[in-house]
Image (cartoon, rainbow, N blue to C red; front, side, top):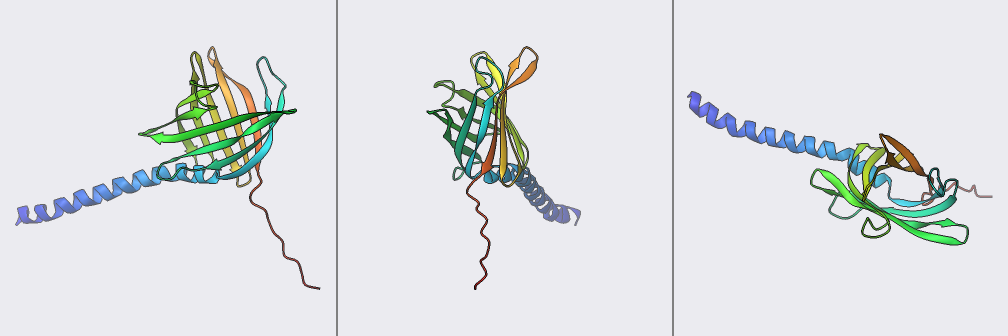
Length: 183
């Protein structure tokens, strides 16, 4: 009798454990999904180089954020303008296994940086590890509310992270429409 009960209960316990495990993986992925979806849309705003050779250089950026089908991640694509010159800029990040991988400005094979890791801190903030040859650093994106995003790129100098680029973007695709009273 005992073995009949155990043989009936054991598969049920395994099934419940599997469902709970899948649910906890899904709930762990929920902040990631929320963050990436909140980055979708059109963004514009100023930025500044805050350290290095070009310190003090101000620029204006315009990006379109999108999420890829079938995988966790995002793409920010657009450009930044300094005076009359526009520099195309993009970042592409996708979940690979347990981590995020991607590229900023075409990666180290191009003129940019590789995204070699990172994580979603919560539904409003991500931090990605960036790398190019001996240069190491982080790119942080924060979406404090539905209509603003700050992006900071910092590089490691000795034992310290030094911010080098900062951007403050505003969403421009969500237009609030008021009603007009009839005469």
